[in-house]
Length: 541
Ligand code: F6P
Image (cartoon, rainbow, N blue to C red; front, side, top):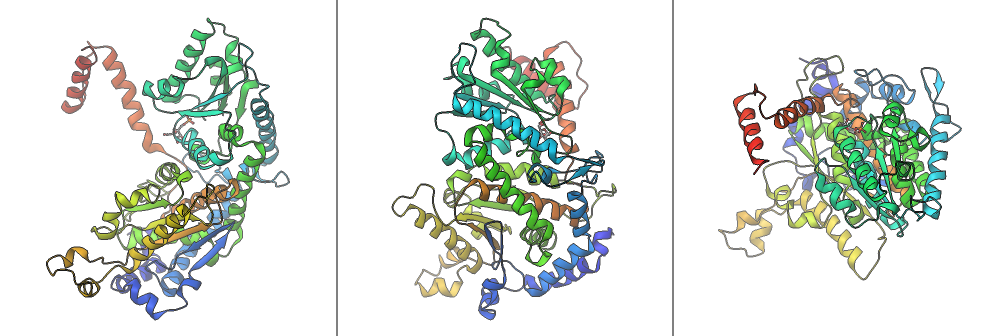
């Protein structure tokens, strides 16, 4: 048995979960009028309402005891202190330093990294202002109007999500687009209506070796060169690089003056407030970007200092463990009732699943408990007319995070009231359901009645803030980063590496070589051989 399963709190939770499995949220609310008030916590502009969870005071006591037994506080402090918590890569994981105020001292290997962070931010600010003011000119002397970020994974998802989330705050004179897929269609569609002499490419890649990004960056350079009649000098006006790999950036043809660096202690999926955020800064402006970072920092400070019992990331992280490991929940839905957050679930998929999709402990032992759940979601109310059916009446338990704001950024008529009414009603319906008696009392035909029953007892959180702004967005993202950290600490896994993406990458290089050398003998399994053989023919038709 694993060390985690042997912990007293784990075993207490195991026994306790049997008791709670038979209790209904309807009865818990009826028996406990103070529930809504007790199961509520606030931080950094956000309110967490967690009363609709299948928990009671004892559950929480056991969960916090588990966190303490697993050394969550010491692990958190080690991360904040710049220790090499990413053990398989022997690196610190210091995304919290990216948003630390200039006066803070955070050391890696004895050196304070905060001044370097602020030096890069200053250069980014100068460049962003030049582009926004129209003083950064393309090769024909026209100002840059189009920004195309080329990156993938953490070098794409954070910037896209932030751009969409903060579109209300963006400079509408600029066109901002994102290219990530190695499918050329992504690039072709992104640039089809753009003038090359008004377009800036931001090549965002921590390693500057990622196949998709480098392929797209070369195609972008070809596209520019065609328009600039091969004038290599145009590259300096139309390309900047965001990377930790100065050598590869120079080899590509971008001078280090046009490079905005970051550090190996910033993981790809934790990098959106490093220089990887340059497209965000250009779009919303340096002041709003500073507010975004301040929001992250406010949640960091809350996570670092608030007692576990009032700590939003800790509470939400532990609730996730509760359902994953004691109720067999396999997925977690994230349902923003805010159109601007439409890319938030996609962003969270990398953050959560690349981080906690792990099968061995930090020490390398195979786990004998479930780790990171599948995260998924869509904005409300769209999801209601698609997959909510399964959440309400299907056979799986799917905890839901609803995210909503008190005020719309585009208020008009009853729209926002209807939006928020739906969010609140969904949480109520999931928790309370509708009994057979209630259905019968409505006079529903006996044969139809079972189809109209909602069992309820489906857990959800409400995450509420006044309005979507850079500060609230930063705090929301940091909240989920620290939820991931909390869960990894319980599961004793490393949330900062991603070895699981390597095998497919290696095999793809072998396969592409075999596709392009059609006489090469194929020595894969028979299904892979057949697929390659099919494509060798199909590509020539
Ligand atoms: O998919 C693996 C991964 O390494 C991610 O972790 C990362 O965000 C992405 O690739 C992009 O990497 P890079 O920024 O080095 O191009």
